[in-house]
Length: 394
Image (cartoon, rainbow, N blue to C red; front, top):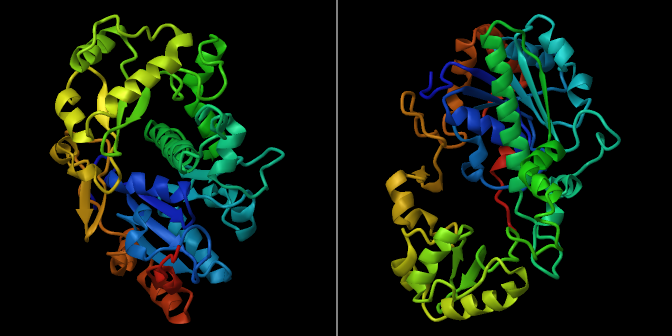
């Protein structure tokens, strides 16, 4: 049993890429026992890397199971029957064709929370279409809003679709459904679509659109790099800093620290944004990032250095909070949020404890003889596919 607020929760994750593994990691980080059912051979999906760097699999245990065999399907059903929740991210209809759809899995287990995440959702004209994060956030309206003036929309990595609008959304939905179960209700299917999730993340922006407060072309609005007081600036050493004093009281702190009079720039006059941005750019170009940190960091100027992922762990604030941790030699973000009464343990590295996967199955009530029989027949083994150890060459 793990530590954390979700200790004791049993989750089966059918191996996939992107949002499904993210959801499983979020639950495992907070103490849930997540058992990952992988394929017998590598799928060839996603970006391949050595298993120790597939960080979304941290804290889980993995077994490979042949779902092309009737015995494998029957075994999967028994594992699901022993769990509280299920995560799957296949194209709609795939689990049903395997004989592992929600109707089958919930027939004798009405309290099961069946979590599904896809790009376009379980129904709709595009439900069966292939896609990736970029396509889903494009359809939601989010991608169009991100980018600089005169430039094409900027892909924000795969944070908005896969992880924010997908994995986090699914985890949020599943925990809501599990809360209902705890209150005496039945389980249910949770349909998380990344288009829906990306759109939901844009809720506040749609309010601004409705108010006419964010209607200029991309790169000309307050929050999309149009404003001089919500922007990143290059320093003398080529590094960047961010400034975001949207409120007048914070702008006055910035001007004071920069040695400028309080009325040096009128940020309320949109027509003067380009010239004021040029003035600030010239000012920030006179000192290094470290020098600006010494002058502005920790003040109410709404300032922070722009740190590369490789250096973020070195910042004093991140060090103090242990925002990043090193697990088995791999630096990575720590579990979040933090819990005072039920703190989570440091996650196990990906696949570090797969040798205990059968033990976990037995603890869930799966018959040891059945596990051994499937293992002897070659339909079940601890750990993921051997091909998963291939390192990405890109």
